[in-house]
Amino acid sequence: MKKILFAAFMLLAPLAASAQKFGHFNASEIMEAMPETATMRTELQALAKVYEDDQKRMQDELQKKADEYQKEQANLLDNMKARREQELNDLYQRIQQSVQDNQQAFQKAQMEKLQAIQEKVMAAVKKVGEEGGYVYLMDTSSGAVPFINEKLSTDVAPEIKKALGL
Figure (cartoon, rainbow, N blue to C red):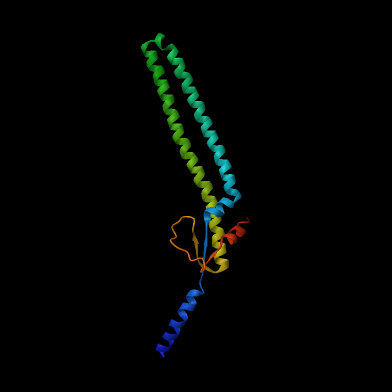
């Protein structure tokens, strides 16, 4: 009896495995189609412009003070020269620190905005996967998926886009 049940199970196992649904999608393409991505780019470009303008203003100030120092240098006492050189050095250091701070703030803003978009895509992927009864949905955009047999796997990108309202 056990042998008969085992034989029946072995015959039906391939059928059960083939009934499983697998899907794939390209998250990068989906994200590019989202209006949030265009909004993110616009906002990040505006932020970058603010930082660039701030840096240019500070560099112009440094250049102006350096030019003034060059003109007056011959007539200044040694202690005044040292103080002015220290002021120029301090301003230069503030500019360098500002550049670093702005880069970090920009990267943080970029990551936060990108993460919000990715979370929205992943929520749609989960919804499509659950509603469609998929076992796996693979993201092909990273290139980490070595092979997908497109005859046995469904491209669910249109369904994900629909879930996102695209």
